[in-house]
Amino acid sequence: MILKYATSIAAAAAVCVTLAGCSGQAALPSSEPTPSPTTAAIPTPSPSVNCTAALVLAQVDQLLAGQDFEAHYLTIGAKFTLSVWLVDPEIDPATPLSGMAAADRQALESGLSISYRIVDQIPCAQRVFDQVNPMIVDGRFQHWYRDFLPVSAFVGLHDPTTDDLIAAVEATGTALEEPRATVPQAAQTPAASSCGWSEARAAIHAYFGAEGNTAAYLIIGSRLVDQGSPTPNAPDDVGVEVQWPVRDTAEAADPLVLERLDHVAEALACLSPAVDSLEAFVVDPAGRTIVYAVVPGSIIRARMTPLPPGSVRVYHMPALAQP
Picture 1 (cartoon, rainbow, N blue to C red):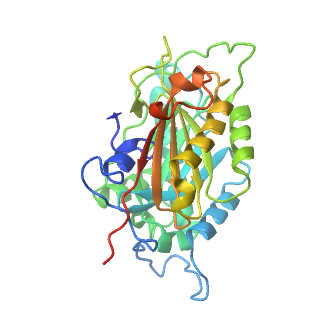
Picture 2 (cartoon, rainbow, N blue to C red):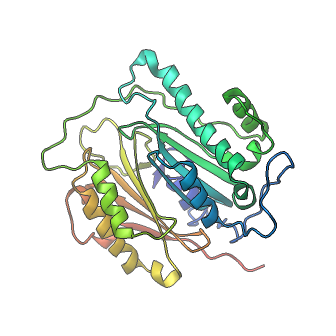
């Protein structure tokens, strides 16, 4: 697996390298990650409140209601992470070169603002999560900004400006990821038999059902996983990422994972622009990543059913060592 951005949630770098043992290390957090410190300046939940990741996720859903977003939680390396994918309608999907600086600033502001609002308005987020992973796309789901921001950076801030948020993140020793560097490609006319992301996404969520901590989102142009055989003449890679929870490791056995991937691939076969890569994260009830899988877009586009097992890369995360 060739990884182009080592800090991306959707990339295998943070999961395969630090979780699947590709680097010879297994760095998964416990089911109760070390919380970030709180301050008196920010309201804290009553001691009687049981701060859980599921509670925070439900509150994020309320906070972002009315926007086009996906939110879920999982382990990234040794850090418990709240990931939020958001479509920013203020970013022009056809931004010209002359507008790139303003669009990049808008994407950065959105990512930092979402992260700050979660920490500021959802006190339990401070107790539960180590970092927030904002992913900002435009109305055509093109990548503009994604990052890993420590929760501790936002604790104690009051009505911060974007520059204040940047300074707070950098003060923790975290370097901000650079926003989009290239002008978006012109929109392509989809084939009559194709489907858009909204349709494919609805089909995936219908299959997963109403269970919490599921997610399905599309990011175009972030070049996360190099499959070696992208869609011919595709100007930007088309990456779909999904996550679903399981109750125990028995539900994460290869046949069951492949069965679910079959259904997801079926929903994506008609997608326009055509998918280049499908990445899947299977998590346990505590949000620990226990399986990571990659499906090359070529076999999805070929509508191979069922998916050839040899073509799907499935990585089982090593179990935590007992203290």
